[in-house]
Image 1: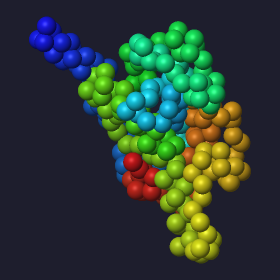
Image 2: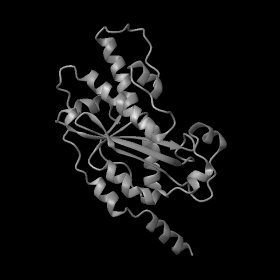
Image 3: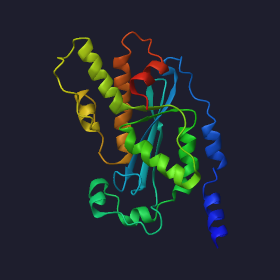
Image 4: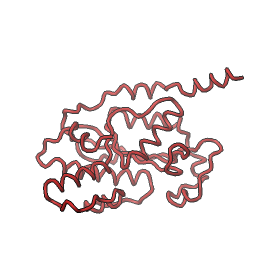
Length: 235
């Protein structure tokens, strides 16, 4: 019986071919101009904020090509929680995903091929990487012993970099506090529209707009490389 349990654990952690192909890249050349790269902007909805005990409930993403958001690449899916996991009522009030909805959703196994297809060979962009990256890595590690590969940019980190830069250049006072890192607050501060919050795809679209605005501010001379962008907001 012990042997069978260990064998089941081994099989559970085998990485599927689609994940191994994703891990192999290749990724955009860091010497290239940032607009020449392909990006995928991702957001997740979860049952809470702790990847060790909470779970993914929804994933939304949109691609960026040539410095423009590609609405034809939008993708959203719900994710069924593990058997026996009960989504807390406080979580439901935030994202409005009912227990019945997620109970009928596909499993993480089922959504993995489509998710990986969108992530492959693209720079991942997220807002507050501890949440999105933490939950995806937890799910990949638990199910397959894998993790996210390739470069990752955090728009919250870019916001801090832009704040520091503005202080150095004298555009704002040195005593001015750092901006709030909430997605709505940052988007609004840059004059950007905010789509319906706490929806994975809507938040991915808001993050995509924020990222493009931030990258443009970091690139006043039109020579910002991927490497320099990653130095400013890379995870």
